[in-house]
Length: 444
Image (tube, rainbow, N blue to C red; front, side, top):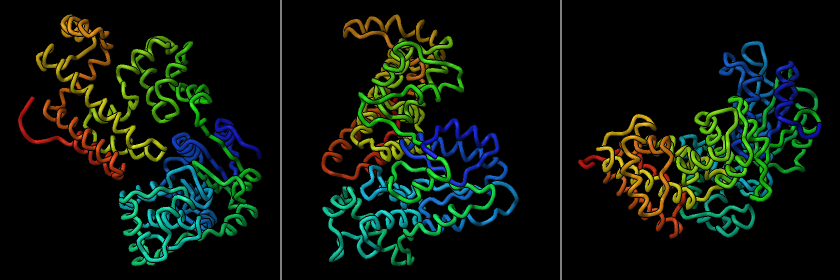
């Protein structure tokens, strides 16, 4: 089969037709979202705990064994493999090292180690070659040349720690031989069984990729890398379908200019616009008002998490964003902009509302706007959107002024650290903790 449309694949499953293998490849957020939708159709919620096997970092042989094993109870069985290293090209575009490190930090040390070993195996390296400080091991420069992986100091420390863990636990690289999995799919998997592969990048010449075309469905969910080639039309329609709304003339172009190819952010913005805009169509003016004023830093989900002081949510967003290629300096800029906005709203809250957060947009228009308008006229600034300012003031009320000032200082320190070649993930994690975790002491 040639590349399939996700809607057609989902419709086919609803009609009772199940293929032995599904490969979704492309933009990470879209791929994971599509894989989740597919798995939910293939395996009912009640059977998920028993008939769904998730084998992240699994080898082809391990995947084949699981796929061939009958479930405990009758019904469909699905094996889901996310970011399979055995399909990745040698010099992949994704952050394979980052995924290994994320698993490691999340307490999934064995998965992180296996991902790391699978990455090294692309260059023919094993456990003894992981630590660049070991005599005869590949250098930092070789990691860049062979695997397109740039190692920071913290990465080198991670490699050393992971190498020691692999030796102690006797963990070896996942077997790269795909013959067992190829044979199983070619001969036929047990009736009702299906393999779902979710990958951001694959080697088109890999025999498993070719077999997925022949025996199953390959769904491409790619997004153009260059801004001028970016077409978000179909994706926007997909995200708005549950709300039964559409974008009016110029609205999509306005969104594209504000968020670029960040698909995760696009979904968040469209959900927000669909919820708060009136009428069946989201107009360009809605985008200009709501998106700009609620998210000047162009990272709405991060803004929302920081406004709620949700450290876990902010860290999860940052990890996902960096996994999709967002640089730590971009996230730092977003955090700094959010903090400045919160500080400004905090000043206005105390200056014009006596420290009492407004309850509605009408409350803002009645209590705050008359005095705020005079202040903004002096700087030739327009009044902010009343709805956006309502939420911003409520969020600012959750912070003390000294905390926001301290957060700005932390942003400056993070900027210096990043420009001094510090590990981006660690710097951002420390910054988010400084902003979100409540400090002790008095102040307003």
